Image 1 (cartoon, rainbow, N blue to C red):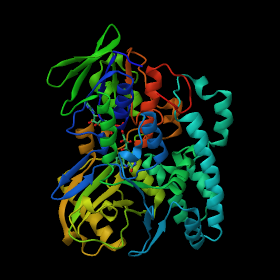
Image 2: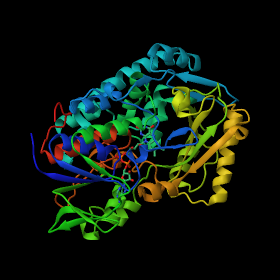
Image 3: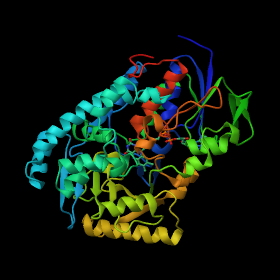
Image 4: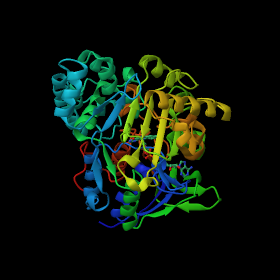
Length: 502
Ligand SMILES: Cc1cc2nc3c(=O)[nH]c(=O)nc-3n(C[C@H](O)[C@H](O)[C@H](O)COP(=O)(O)OP(=O)(O)OC[C@H]3O[C@@H](n4cnc5c(N)ncnc54)[C@H](O)[C@@H]3O)c2cc1C
């Protein structure tokens, strides 16, 4: 099929570039205007002094979703990326120095670990995962590739029948607490909710599918780093004529008689197209790029949202290697409930933080100089957190001291030869994020499916929204799905199921 239609996409995050590639393949002339200097949005990459750092995401999950997207584009993902399944998937550190458990995408291996922590938990895990796997199938087929326009799209017979099985009205915390007794195993089963930006007590039961994603589908790594994935999608898009414009922030969406007809760039130039799609954070799109009467949501709406946490991040170059780290490493706080309260409501550094350390140099020799490590250290903290340089230094010292004492990273501070700190204000500055949220809108029930902001403007014709603020939500594969949902809107495809062709 060939058309001469044109589209402007604001932002080169996963949602924007995936949609650009699909529209390009259908013959649209697509121009992507991105405020930053490179592709990927929150999944950008930077390099310094021989170290390569993925700036945001590091967990390559749901490989089936990326594979499906490449197949839709008529391509084989393996011709673009060399993917490795990580084993172990990740390491969880316990209270005393260096003590840890490893978890795998292998039910037999995990059963041994689970049984050692809680007698009989291996069998429980297996039964639980059978159900999670089944629910993943239902969610993919019925829920996440679906556009919701009215209450009847959600409360129709089929969705209600399948939805009951997904325990939509139950919380993840309740489901896991009734299944496992060990505090450690409960944390292992629930930490994925943090990747969705949600406290386990507020995450609806349907997100148990994340346990199937973790324990069955596994955690993967593309050689060269996560940043290779947006680059690959960018290549697909360019193959179909998509033009990327970097360092090109959009100042305003131009509307005429209630229709989006183009954008005005910060440098004052106007660009026109038949439709505009914003991949920028929705709060920014509504409050900065549209006039008040063109917004779908009020200031009050935004103030009442549950925002996913922000993050305190350190990118560290270390002139030695630590054998006690694997690629993904997690240290869970002792007081889980207090930590969740703090990372949603308390605008300071957590009292006893949970810490994530990614060491991609364990899987990839090309991302750090020989014998060195490139460590990505992340502490979740609340959106809207307030701080100054002195506080950031204090938080860095506290985090490093915990890593030395609890993970056993001996003399870590002495071995740091490169350090860059990144926090809430950087998210706002770099991505126009609301209150510095790292991820956007949390996945509470009231902010999922029908209740997540829609991907089509109610007020302005030919204006669409794509990315983590829209259904299905946060995460790289999820934003690739959000692009397919917008594609369905544009092409008038009403099927709720994954596309089988473009
Ligand atoms: C620290 C961190 C860790 C994460 N870890 C994982 C993980 O391990 N696995 C996973 O799957 N997901 C993870 N995520 C989530 C995932 O990265 C995001 O959900 C996803 O990348 C968001 O994609 P998006 O399509 O919403 O676009 P975004 O990445 O939000 O990109 C939007 C783009 O719009 C641009 N933009 C904004 N305003 C304008 C403007 N006015 N003009 C032009 N351009 C503009 C921005 O610069 C940006 O490039 C993580 C995120 C962060 C921040």
